[in-house]
Length: 449
Image (tube, rainbow, N blue to C red; front, side, top):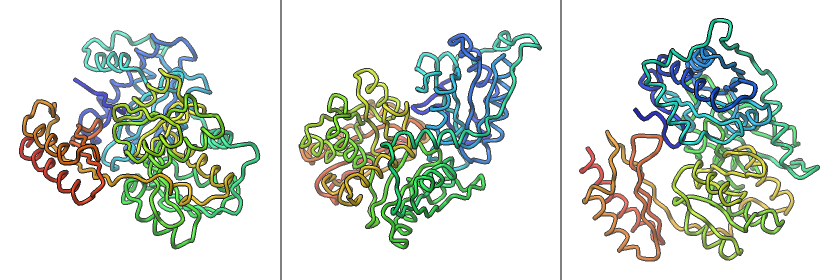
């Protein structure tokens, strides 16, 4: 049984594996593995987003972990990067985030951080999977007096806000700036608005009233329309959009145009190189990053390295080769000098500080990064297959690549988090790549029913 995808465990609530019974065993298995791996405080930090099911999963996880002799500290709703930060700075043995990120409220998930704030290595995830299905898992249970306790940390949001502020240049304030923040009714519903107000900005917060079922509902990074409209309505300097757990951020300039992760990477890389902070004059991104970003970076004397899709692969490459800036087009931006994972609030603060330092609008900063048109089509499938083994799909892809030549790219891959095949095409002519993409999607539907 495979539980872990590219971003932890995820699924529909009250369906395997996101049932109380399975989550209880996940907690038991994780505690067993982590107790063997680390000998620190014997403490796991657990945070979550605002989904209704978070209460149920939090309770099941806590019970499972405590039953195996580890202690738990609960922080409630907090952005995923806040959990990574607190896990590291509070010397926890591990951190757990209960969230399905950008998915609808009916889904939920569990992702783990090791004691150093990085995601668990594959070897530990495999060991947890093995123990979840081990009929003899109960043999690891300690005696009654050795079961764990659960505690609550009440000032987690304040600690995280102070950390985010510390990533800014000394004395940096955003007085005189008007900003719209789309909190996606998720984990950052308090964090980012409070943070910006403390830094002197005028803040208009939208989608900041979570009720357990409205997380990501027609808002956040997957639905930028309401943010674009609000920025124009309020004549704001910029808009900031998070996803449900706020490890992503996308921006909107003062003209109501979306500034995606590729442009954010370009803006930050250019500034970091000029300030001599960009290690190796290199940015790490994924195969999804636009050719336009690569060409912009080349002009600035910056190299772009591509990895598989998934922020964990970006982080792994950054660590292995000593780079400090990486991310994804979707808005996962990693500043390894500051945090160990994608951090939406930190990323927003870095871009705003560049605007302030240069006295430039966001539209001006983004204008030099000319992106190629890109089409992304998600095809729902009942079961994932190795696409390379299906001749019809390979033939359609090769035909599209031949049509585009050196002026475009085709990427077809299985989603790591959802039962979908993602089809991405990039080229100079939007009409051409749209037609080619639809043809590939049609072939996938016909061959992968």
